Length: 102
Image (cartoon, rainbow, N blue to C red; front, side, top):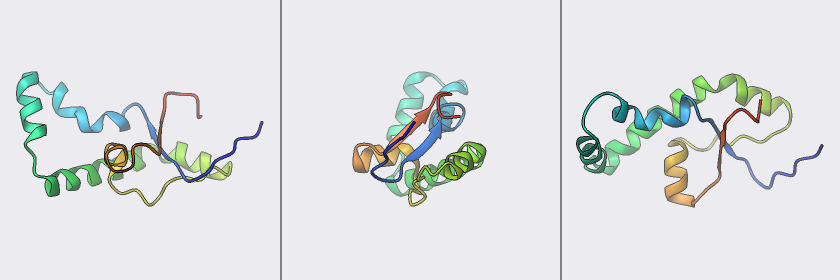
């Protein structure tokens, strides 16, 4: 099988990595409070939080990312803010692994 890849791709396991930005929603506050908190965070602070989540995601997904790299898949290592900011800034360029990439 051959896979053509035009550019490096950000790969994120759906569990737990892609869920990190939503942890607040599972911790007990009412939905409306969670929405208000997440919508009211200043952009500079939000970027800092997403950078930390992206680093944690890389640690969680290390085995998957190393395996894909060994197979010749080009991983987006330039991204520092994670999949949500990649979506907001570029409209895509990421892939959620739900078990098919391993």
